[in-house]
Image (tube, helix red, strand yellow):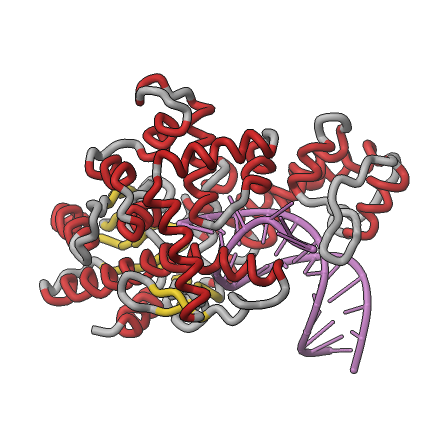
Length: 398
DNA sequence: AGGTTAAGCGCG
DNA sequence: AAAGCGCGCTTAACCT
């Protein structure tokens, strides 16, 4: 069965959304934004449109004379989250703007919009999945995008609570645990990294233990956070400069961490170099299953463009292999549901997560089948692990 | 009126 | 010389 057939069925099935709940949240957000707007006007000493970049720069950098910490691509003073966080340490207005921005994003993109996307005939929201958009082989979700529903803040998770199952059914969420890092372990063949996954260790903790020369139980919360940043940064081709910026540490310190990492995980260091060289020789890189990403700028004479292509070359085999794996899993799950004439349905895919709507009578079977099928689509040098949760809504299924 | 770009930010 | 990969959506500002 082709992926396109699974997608067709998922799009047609759609997902149930509690529009009343989102509309109520919209009203709450609107009220809070109104209050924050008034506070911002007081702190600025004059009224202005908080959404207008031009007016905002006028207030922050001319009227209040705050320092310009970063420029945008076109040379204007940046007012992004990172800048406002720093300015918020010394001034009240940036903090207010951050709070306002956070709420405005939730309201305009989600709580106002999703209720309007409910199909009149089905009473559900039907996204469209694009199979030919993302160069790495991932799917893309549009109209609406259901792959970027908030999850990182409490206010945002209230939106997930509105993604519900009908009476008698539950929402099941099954996601691959650390799938891209596992793929890095597979592709690099690094023995330490493979060992950590085979021992079912907390991989960020294990990395912290290696990099900071600790035993597993000695690792502090901060060391684990640093190790997590290193692990993710590496998969994106991040430099010492970027790591230092992310962690708020000296560049030399970040460089030392990276050196320590590569000393402990020599297979990963070798992999990074091999992938750069292969990209340069072949003009493309491949996933485990042979999906290719061509890199037109890998031999560019422009160093910035070439470096960008190298970062893409490092990331694509991992992101792309993860995309291949979950597509195989989607086909396996959908085929099984049909073969056994079950009523459970795939309703969403979010890159490393499958969301299903499951009648309570089928929950036991789904809890056994879905992780087995997802972990069984490939045998890499490390085990694939799936975390599964369920509940009356998407938030509670996590 | 309608389309495009820039900046910003939601997710994995 | 730039500095972290892959997406889609919203608003303001600018353009035709």
